[in-house]
Length: 212
Image 1 (tube, rainbow, N blue to C red):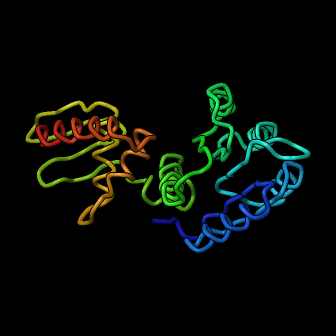
Image 2 (spheres, helix red, strand yellow):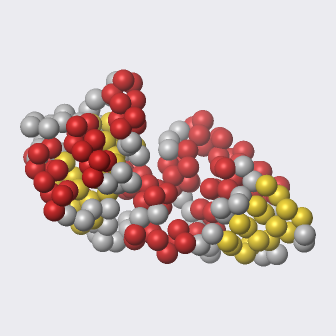
Image 3 (tube, rainbow, N blue to C red):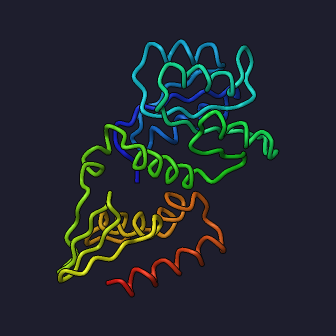
């Protein structure tokens, strides 16, 4: 499930939780730098070469939102996940306005966090996922699928796909001859694994089957 060697900056002021999460991520072959506050985190960020940042919101010295703004100034395309107990709508909106890729509230499912990390890196075209990201055309039997143009070719006929159909078909192509977990598609495309998003994905699967 993990992208081996991914370098993560983890800013978390709870020492017990921080160590547990660091160990869990390292167990899945990520490289993790743990910082107990925002000041140490921004210093580490300037010195390091990170692929993703996971930031607690409520931290001493410098809060997660302030830290995120500073990170975005230094590297605007840096993927960010806020990990926090602050579940109010205003806080979540603030996080996304800053440029967060996801906002995870505690307590959370650790396995879901892994899927979120993988989905974000695939969307962002991180250096470790670059090989997958460079592929923009796929052959599916007698069909030719152009991902960037959202076009499906067959026998001279061209079908224009919707954005979600396109992302879903691409994800399926990336799992050629393998099983694609439903959770990966739901979190990667719909950003939520719920009954309603699951039913929505079923509709798009049916559309793809019709097109193919």
